[in-house]
Length: 118
Image 1 (cartoon, one colour):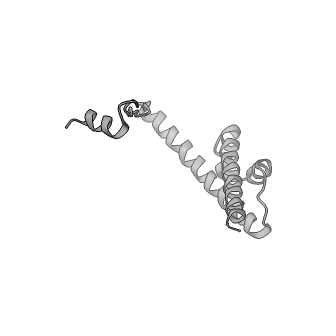
Image 2 (cartoon, one colour):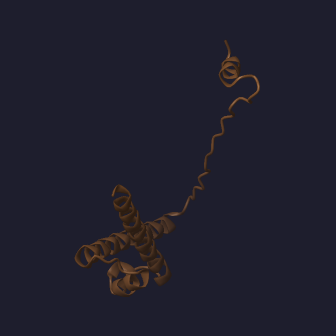
Image 3 (cartoon, rainbow, N blue to C red):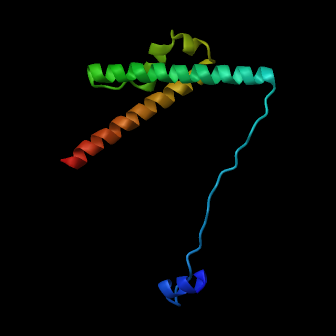
């Protein structure tokens, strides 16, 4: 018995068989030269280090005060950080904004889970 015949038996003759759809993404690979590769790796590392610092600092303030700082407060508080100063200010601010938004979202989901369990 073929797969199509089994599908027709399961679904009945009036329904159409289920069509499998697969989604994928295409990677855009860059082939940077040696100098550009070093620069990109430096920016990635500094951005990651800044995100870790911002996440740690925000978490500590959250545990201490029970309040998450806004993204603007995080920008202001981290402006003297060496990882912040190693990047262009827009890049550093975007990194810290992503940290602030993810922590805020995590806090929101945790509070919804507490309300839902009551």
